[in-house]
Length: 81
Image (cartoon, rainbow, N blue to C red; front, side, top):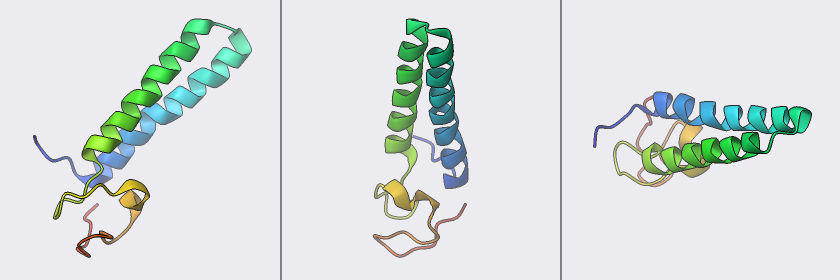
């Protein structure tokens, strides 16, 4: 599997989450049930994407909330991006 730079992973991972939140807010206004379903799928896709690709490029450990950090909390290597 091709590695994606962490900078791109963070951007790509946040877009579906924000879109899901916007769909939920739109559903509160329009009262359309299918928007909630679309928002849940959108947010689930973002979570799966981040679980797969938000990893240290050196040791491969999942970064979790440390994805925006400067150094990997497991191996101590500098995270590029």
